[in-house]
Length: 197
Image (cartoon, rainbow, N blue to C red):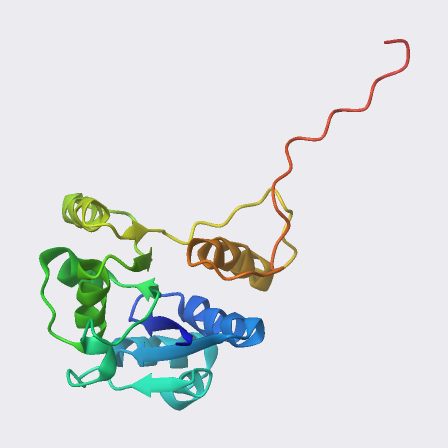
């Protein structure tokens, strides 16, 4: 059975996370990718990256329509290891938190949780109000991982792409895919001794 990862792209800002994740999964090899792009996700990708839905879908092995509730990934009997929603809108977060499987993205996420598989949500919203925080807590208590794509700077990124890839390096760690995307933290280097000490 091939290793399978589902990637969903929803309407929050940050379509680059989903697109780059699909690119990295393809480069890693040995992973069968399934993608679902919401209508709002397609709009955001077009606005932010100048890429159409078909361009995103071409990066995956299998593409599913967001309204296709009869797709293979709507059933737990279709085996996959993990699902990443990148980016994850507040609406999608709320649907998952409430078990409201009204489209293929929230249904596949619901199945991922009930089958005790790995679900990672790159929730992209700020500032947060109480409902956002409650929904994050609910998803966490159900076994999902809420991972807002907050950039790190200890590796001194020189471009937006390096900042995105540092976040995706952590995501790939979470879903067990090996990579060489970003340097790993090895502790603070000891300061050089000053003369006379």
